[in-house]
Structures are given as structure tokens and as C-alpha cells.
Amino acid sequence: MRASYGDELVRRIIILGGGIAGLSAAWQLARSNSGEIVLIERESLLCTHASGRNAAIFRPLEAEASLAMLARRSLALFGELSPERPLVEPRGLLLLARAPETLAPIAQTAGAQGTPHEIETPERVTMRLSGLNVSGWHGLYAASGGVIDIHALSEILGRASRALGVGIRCGGRARGVKTNDARVVGIEMADGELVAADDVVVAAGAWSGEVGESAGFALPLTPVRRHLALLECQRALPASAPAVWSLDDEVYFRREGQRVLTSPCDETLWRAGAPQAEVQCLEPLARKLGGIDAALGRAEVVRYWACLRTYAPDRRPVIGSDPRVEGLHWLAGLGGFGMTSGVAAGELLAQSLSGRPPPSELAVQRLLTRP
Ligand SMILES: Cc1cc2nc3c(=O)[nH]c(=O)nc-3n(C[C@H](O)[C@H](O)[C@H](O)COP(=O)(O)OP(=O)(O)OC[C@H]3O[C@@H](n4cnc5c(N)ncnc54)[C@H](O)[C@@H]3O)c2cc1C
Image (tube, rainbow, N blue to C red; front, top):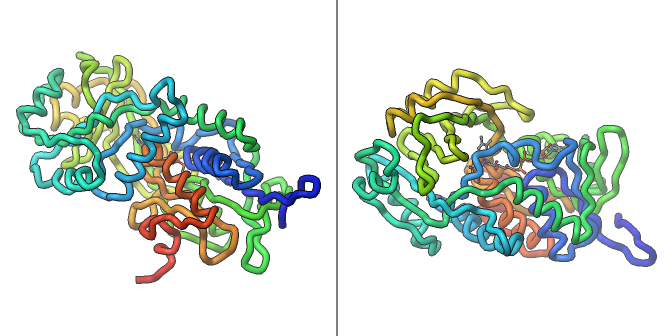
């Protein structure tokens, strides 16, 4: 089934979800002239869920090579999206561990991927975090890490997509994907409207698993809740402070204006939705931060909230066509790295729709083959 414009038949692609995944898919598909593209978002605003409520850290340092590759490519695409004003404030990213061996696999991947990085001694780490009272931590530093302007990113992606003709419909929930004879024929909206399409891209974040299941093509995509908190510290972090991520007792923090944005890196299985935040998250947060710098552990909590990260079992993104049904595609499982990697993941998705499959470690197929 194809949408018809005069005599011309144009392939219609519907993208379900208007977070970073859906917007990146829309922009990349429109850039590659893939057809008529319609993005459907059930909230009245784009990026209402994970893509608007995250820590916004650009993390180029990963042990997993595919994630490091996506981060590197995203940075280049950020430059194309916003050539005048960088979308990442390059404050740097510093990973911490008591034992240098913990950092070694990440440094190895960075080396293999050509991501500039520095292995830092405890003395160097203490100097780099001069506003804090830290000692005994080994570090791995990447100057290209930093803080993404996530609001500018979503706005620019939306604007660029619309300029290329993408139709963006907010405030309408898709109830399910319609198939006929192992082929996608469109979607059904919650109000019963049927929208015909040749292809559907599931980019529905925490809801992606449900959307696939309703069409009869489930994938193991699991949402997990994580908290973030904003702290008021006695002494503000210095302007030069990088985003800091401790790998031992997982916790991260970064400057947010005069305050500190931080997460205890908690992880609780959750159903798709807007998760409730729980005050119990604050005790482990204070303990973990106090293990790095005692004063940071005592900082006053201004506000805290929670949101969902969604993972495939191997914690790699799920990108490309579903071999079980023609016309069904996925851009999901962006976990805790979607702001860093989403735009590049969207590029792989667009390439997949034009017949160039993604690397096998990211493809849908890997989740269908039983061990
Ligand atoms: C606490 C926290 C901190 C994080 N920190 C970072 C970080 O520092 N750096 C980083 O790179 N990443 C970070 N992430 C990860 C990042 O936020 C996510 O990977 C990313 O936002 C996922 O984007 P998405 O588009 O897949 O999902 P979402 O942003 O959730 O978008 C999915 C959209 O689909 C819509 N939708 C769902 N079902 C339907 C339907 N049936 N019909 C229509 N629309 C539908 C939803 O309303 C939603 O808007 C963090 C995540 C969390 C939770």
C-alpha cells in the first residue's frame, strides 16, 4: 500500500515516538529522501519522557565498541545540525576507579576507535578536580565529553525534519501496528483512525516492547527506572570541572549552573510510563557521593525525579528491519546512552531502510536467535 500524490506513488513511513530516537530517525530518513515521513507522538510536546529528563552527558568513553562508534559519529552529526553553535559544551568527561584495571577496557576501546583520551594518575585526577577533596582515584579523561544542550538538540532536529517535509503529529497515541500477510499496512490510532503506511519505525522508548507485542512481534526490551537529583553545594564546582562518573560504586555528577546534577545510578525494573520518584534514592546517592568527596555527600537536595531507560538484554541498541514482518523497523533500546548516540543510530536506521543493514551486533536479528 502506498500513499498517492497525483500520479506518483510515494513510500509512506510512520515513526512512532517523538523522543531523540524518533526525531533522529525522521531527520535521517528525510535527508535520505526515503519517502513521505510522518512522526506520531502521543504527548502534546516532543521529548516529554526520557529525552527531556536525562542527565545530558555526552559520553564518548565506553567499553562497548558499537557505543563508542555511535558517540563519535553523533558528535560529527551534531556539527552538521548546528554548525554555528556547538550542541555539546566540551567540559570533558572523567571516569573514575580505584583500580586502573577497571578503566583499561574502556581505554582500549577508545584507542581502537580513535577517541582521544588520557589515562590519569591519582595525582592528576586530584588536580583536575581541584574544587573537590578527592584522593586515590585513577582516571580516564576525554576532552570531547561534556554536556549536551538537549533542548536545543530536540528543537533543531524537529525544525530540520519539518523543513525537509516531515509531518509531525503530537497528541495522538498509536494503539498498534496493523499487518496483513506478514506485511505492515499501517497503524491504528487510539481513537480508531487507521493510517496507511508501507513502513513503521518503532521508536517509542519505554513503550517500544508493548508496541511490538501488540502487533504480534515482541522483542525483549525492558524499561528500568533511574533517579536524578539536583544539589545545592556549599561550594560550587569550578567552571572547569568535567562531568565525573565513578565506575566503582556507580554514581555520576556534573555542574548545572551553580548547582550539581547527579544520579545514584539506581536501576529498578519498571513498567512503561512516567515513573514515580522515591525519596529512598537519596540515601545511596549521599553515600556514594560522600565516598568521592565528603562535602558533596552532605549537599542539600533541591529536587529529584525519575525516568526510564530501556534496554535489550545485551544492552546494545536495536536498529533496523524486523525479519519477521516486512515493513517493521526498530530504533529502540537506547538505554542510558540515547542522547549521546541517538542521532547516529537514526542514521543507521535510515541506511537500513535503503537496503544497507546495520552492523550485526546492533541488528534486530540478534534478539531473535535463541542461544
Ligand atoms: C535518568 C536518566 C538519565 C540519563 N542520562 C543520559 C545521559 O546523561 N546521556 C545520554 O546519552 N543518555 C542519557 N539517558 C538516556 C536517554 O535519555 C535515552 O536513551 C533516550 O532519551 C531514549 O530516547 P527514546 O526516543 O528512545 O525514548 P523517549 O524519549 O522516551 O521517547 C519515546 C517517545 O515515544 C512516545 N510514545 C510511546 N508510545 C507511543 C505510542 N503508542 N504512540 C505515539 N507515541 C508513543 C512517548 O510519548 C515518548 O515521547 C538517560 C536516561 C535516564 C532515564
